[in-house]
Structures are given as structure tokens and as C-alpha cells.
Amino acid sequence: MDWHQGASPREKLPKAYGVYCEIVWPVRGIRIGISKNIWARHGNAASWMRSMKKGSGSRARRVGPYANHAKDWGDLGLETFVLSTDPRPKDENLRYECETHLHRWAEEQSEWKNFNAEKWRPKNYGIPVLDEAAAAKAWGVELIWSLPQVPTTARGLS
Image (cartoon, rainbow, N blue to C red; front, top):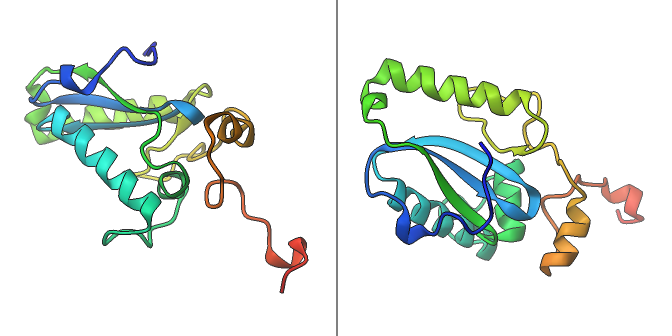
């Protein structure tokens, strides 16, 4: 799983069943899943992230590492990579085993910020792997939601 930024443009994504990984380059984030149409899944993820940044949509109140990231960054730096287009994960049991295996890998690795939390809350869920304040500055993003929150009394506010 050695991805390279810019190597997976949306127009080359398959409109078919498969296993994918969404990469969020600015923070080295990953989110792994299985979709009936990887091309459409990427479009839906990008649209959802943009709506979170605007504060619109039915799920704009969501919080957590992935939702908070989207509120600050939108879909900036989002790229989807195909891991497999093997149709066998259409079988529910095999799909569950495949996703579980990949999510466990994501939980054990330390080079990518893990945004996977569909089946359980992994021990490294949303843990930064780089200086995100510096990344935000480099990408021209103001962080409001995705940095650890400081209690208002610690900031001198009440």
C-alpha cells in the first residue's frame, strides 16, 4: 500500500465493484472500504466533505476525527485508490472478512492517520501522524475543528 499523490485521478477510477482506499494527503489520512461503484463512491465522499466544510447537509452536526477533518479541510487533498476490483467481496461474509483484515492493518500501522471506525473504534482512530497545524498552514487552511480542543476556560474564555 504504497500510494503516490496524483497517481489516481477520478476519471481513471472504475465504475465497478471493488475495494478502495481514500487518501487525505494533507494529513496522511486513510479510509478503506468496499463499494459497488468506486468512481461514484469517490464523488460522494468528495461532495460530503465539501458540504461539511460549508456546514450544510443533513449530517453537518456530525463530530469525530473524520467529520471534523472535513469541516476544516473539505475535500482538499482527497484521492481514491483502487486496492482490488475482484468481484468476490460481493459475498457478504467474504466482504466482512476483507474489510476487517484491512481495518486491522490500518489499526496496527503508524504512517497513516486512521479514519476507519465503521466496525469498531480502533486504538489509533484519528491520531495524527504529522504536525497538522504546520500542514494546515502550508495548505492555507484554518483549523477550527480538527485539532485537539482546548477547554474554553484554558483559553481565557468563559
